[in-house]
Length: 272
Image (cartoon, rainbow, N blue to C red):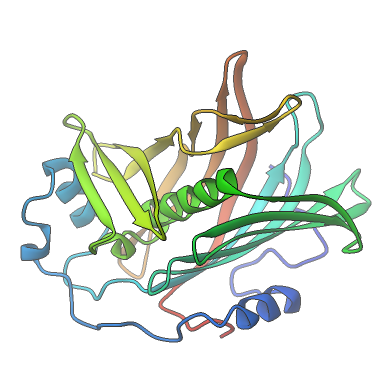
């Protein structure tokens, strides 16, 4: 997978200034509501597979995660017949106030840069894209984006920071021996996903039908999944090494994103 861009894609790289400015301008909470550690009692009543997952992900004995900042590098394409483009992405997610700020940099034709912002804040989702950071080529908002961006926040939490999910917003349901369903409510919206676990209790795939694909005929609700490439351990906690984003369309699968997780920081104030 190609990840060559003019922005650094190494662990410990500093976030781009435009990303930091966008996160700071959002005015998100700067600390947790509580620092109490998750206990076994907090898992009472959850489906067995969900309990196995939360234990495997190292949630028990640690405070609930209240924010994350992640850096990804990889490749992206806009259509099944279009060329892959190198990409570099940074995101900041908040759980105190459910919010997601995601900035991606693409290189079209290996020459022309394009920046995109995907955001969810206060119940509203939006997707914007600009070539050369000047010419707007995409700007979407409305109910489909509200639901879709909240669903992506849920997917992030499931794969990167499950401690974000232990609260009154989340509902858990059994779905067989190696999986479970989870629903998330925020700002009048409710979204859901099904999680499939590997032998160690970590996610191998997350699937949902609460997103809309931007197809030639317009926005179309379609199954979407994020299969996981693999897992490693960092500071004693499981961390995904990378994964993909896949639309399951009537005429076949469309794998449009492949990303490596370069860096992940939990419980960091916005703009740090």
